[in-house]
Amino acid sequence: MMTMHPQTPDILPRVAFVATGGTIAGTMTEDSKTSWAYSSAQRSGESLVMGIPGLLRRAQWHFEQPYSIGSQNLELGHMLQLRAVLLRLLESPEIDSIIVTHGTDTMEDMLYFLHLTVPSHALGKPVLFTGSMLPSDHEQADGPGNISGAFEFLIQCLSTNADVSGHSAMPFGLCMQGLFTPAHRVEKQSTAGLDAFDGPYSVLANTQWLLSRNALEMSEDSGVQGQFASLFDPTATRHPLFEAMEVPVVFCTPGNGPLRQLTDLLNRKPASVVVAAPGHGNIPEACVPVLRRLLLNGVSVVRASRVIAGGVEQGGEFDALDAFRQAPVQGGNAVFSEAGGLNLSKCVMYERLRVLAHSLSV
Image (tube, rainbow, N blue to C red; front, side, top):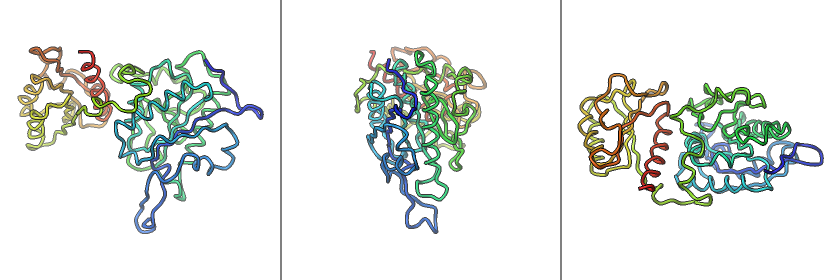
């Protein structure tokens, strides 16, 4: 393992700064005076660092920009591109730590994907994502403070040489507003406000985060770090089967909309379908027959909830599809399961990877 360099006048930390666009690199538009408007992904990562007084001279910087987008436009190919960049930097003996700037719209999608697909043994260096809720030239821009905060956290981890023999001691997750959240626990809590990512698993971004590690550990339904790492080569930037995999979400509200959507899926036969049902995943009775047909036709079904918090475990009022919990069913490979504690976006990503793993193993 490489030696971590503390920050001294003679030896500066070697920090890779990976920019991908987002609001943090955005600028206000001409309409901003009358309507709060901006264009994301307008600045390079190097310009963001240079815009923070004194930061450029505090490290040996290595800049990369694999793409530059508003993160609402994130595609599965982008996820693979960024994964390949991070694996290369994690392997490089010329890099001590990594900061990634990313749009907040799909921050949790990216971090959860990396949680599931970056092998745990590779995480021997701090990897911190950060972003902003306001564009770079807003009078209250939070991006510079978040970049500086992530950098200070990295310096603390490197200068204290925090158990470098144990990869789990190195932070991998989101650093915003002075708080650190592990990658698999990141969720956007609000569409507005600088504290949009302050959640129940966020802790102060300092070396004391290690003391809170047990409380931050994943539950079984969050998936294991690197669980699906073997699905992709370290340098892969495309995977046609992964990118073509369809996992729709059917959101249940009163009316015939959910039933029609599920019926349409019988013709498409997606890889899996996530049903966002009311309450504790209580799927309407009218939807049960078509869900049974989907399962018999090889389409897995995940019972989730449209409620933000609480999750869905086995039990409660709904048991109509319990016979499909074990595959194979009539020679197929579809299974019925619950989302556990995963929100809808993470549930979709987990299912996409789970079904891909099964397809490649057959």
